[in-house]
Length: 135
Ligand code: TYD
Image 1 (cartoon, rainbow, N blue to C red):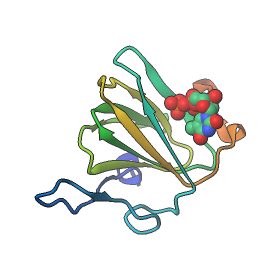
Image 2 (cartoon, protein in one colour):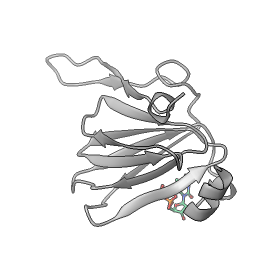
Image 3 (tube, protein in one colour):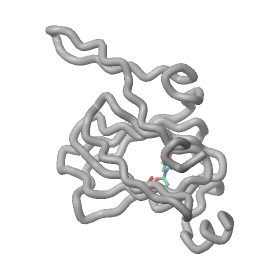
Image 4 (cartoon, rainbow, N blue to C red):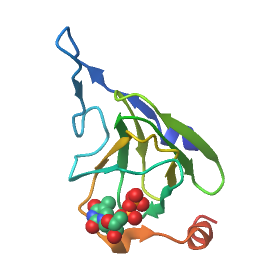
């Protein structure tokens, strides 16, 4: 399976009505894992690159609930960029896939749903090491 197929963009249910928008993400249903952790990144801008890691154990969903950012996704063989520019779309990032988040708008709030509790030891933060592991 190609990298894009392994990292699908998921469109979440928008239950908006005349009162406003409501987007639902259900663990194990609209996304392929149960959610153990939620974090969000804001206050970044167009000068920074975040992420720059792959994870041995964690799966993620990235959603820009406000503003916009981009995520560059690679398995060291293929690469593609997702524009996270709407609050009802997310991208699934499986284990052992490298991601860089960048081009944050000033109002960007990037919500991340994770399949694991935090464990710094499962992060691969050297791209050289990652490339070696993916050979
Ligand atoms: P970092 O992984 O560098 O963030 P990004 O995904 O944007 O690259 O995390 C920044 C700091 O926060 C780092 O010291 C680890 C810590 N951290 C936690 O303690 N728990 C978490 O769930 C996350 C994502 C990070």
